[in-house]
Length: 305
Ligand SMILES: Nc1ncnc2c1ncn2[C@@H]1O[C@H](COP(=O)(O)OP(=O)(O)OP(=O)(O)O)[C@@H](O)[C@H]1O
Ligand SMILES: *[C@@H]1O[C@H](CO)[C@@H](O)[C@H](O)[C@H]1NC(C)=O
Ligand SMILES: [Mg+2]
Image 1 (tube, rainbow, N blue to C red):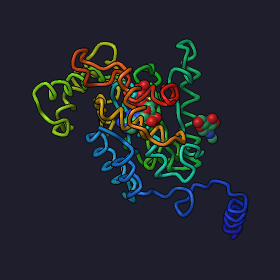
Image 2 (cartoon, rainbow, N blue to C red):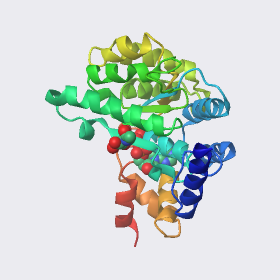
Image 3 (tube, rainbow, N blue to C red):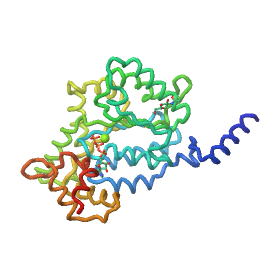
Image 4 (cartoon, rainbow, N blue to C red):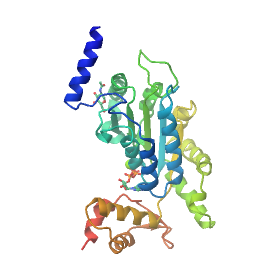
């Protein structure tokens, strides 16, 4: 009886102060069509990633009883949309979007910079994950710069990614983990470039064309061998999601979108002048953008008369 009154009181007070709660009625409502629409209209040139993300996130969110947390690892060259996509996912799950207290973003290099403090980071990170998941099972953890995460630290979060009923009374099955890295980016670029050189459509590239390459290059590579032993072997990562290098036309799309976002009328000439000044590879044919869409928000203003 007391519990019941307490719960009701919390709900009423929470609603009154508009405080975010861990409930599917108000604050955590997955918008499948919203995600689909965002991936189709806001994300450019990433047909492989868009499909994998939509299917896995939707499947996971609609599953009443998932057996393990959702773990996605996004790979690709800089500025191709990895961070952007993780935001789109959060925006279509949490009403407060990236500002939700259930979304946790860790930048490996800023949160865990010193090798010497690794033991402290380990306990801290475990406590954070445990603490936050016990407050809200539907929590999301984004690790940016996963390729720079020390092996020991990865090891310390592995139990949370695995199949398990619960650890110390906490169940992690509803949680979402997203890893972002540039690992394998070069290989993804090479495959994409080969398709282009062979005269094939970019859209013909399928997940399987890249999965093998990703696993061979990233995971057997000496620098990132940790991926192999620590995460792949135990199948903790549900999907490795490749992000392709962006082409000239995608950068133009980013530019037009960014112009509108900054409150200007999108102008093809302005965006074209800006894009022409960016670096593309191969040097002669200028097909793929070296920085993707990353520099656009800052560069654009200079080209607007
Ligand atoms: N494929 C894309 N479609 C639409 N916008 C994009 C795309 N890629 C990048 N952008 C835009 O460029 C900005 C920078 O991209 P983002 O931060 O997602 O790159 P990233 O892949 O995370 O790069 P890094 O590896 O350097 O972190 C985004 O905020 C977004 O506005
Ligand atoms: C939840 O995670 C944040 C980091 O995003 C941390 O500061 C906070 O202490 C964690 N909360 C709990 C209860 O562990
Ligand atoms: Mg990023």
